[in-house]
Length: 220
Image (cartoon, rainbow, N blue to C red; front, side, top):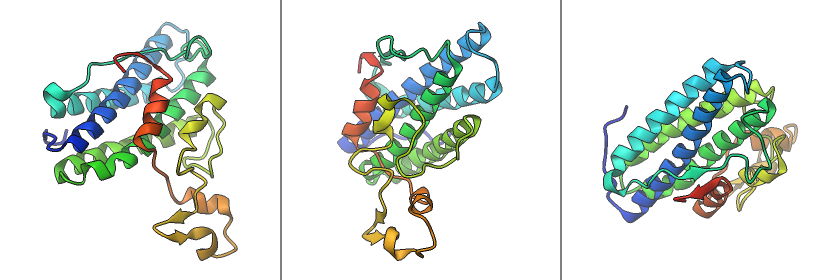
């Protein structure tokens, strides 16, 4: 685990608090998924993968909570059924779809908070270390779902309620990066699908919070 560091600015504290809330969400989701796989409510197919992802999320929670110290938020309470709409712990396709949504959210959200951590190089480095692991999780879950490991435009095969994971102010269909429009700058022989796959986008704080709040019922 990276050296424990303390947040120095209001922006970095807020960024880590949001990151910790997302890690709480993911840890609880995989913890409940593990239990469902043991009870046979969900098949044990790929259980070893989700056991490992759960272990990673638990480590992330420990690291971020320790880094924040007294500023660490209380673990929220979650409803992964979204008011009874979904059944992720009895229906395996739903579990997989939601896992993909959470991992893709984490990848975009960590990028969105990078600017708030620029004042502390140690914090930024630690966040990037977690971010890359979340990206590996996202790719693995997508593989299990027989999807590509990367995002094409803002296309998705998960429930419509999760559309915000791939849209937002900077949609995954964006083709302009640092002032360069890759739709026109890159060879016409390359499709826009391929061009958007080469770049991941960010989620803003408000966009991340809106996704998080779909599942949070207390201490949000």
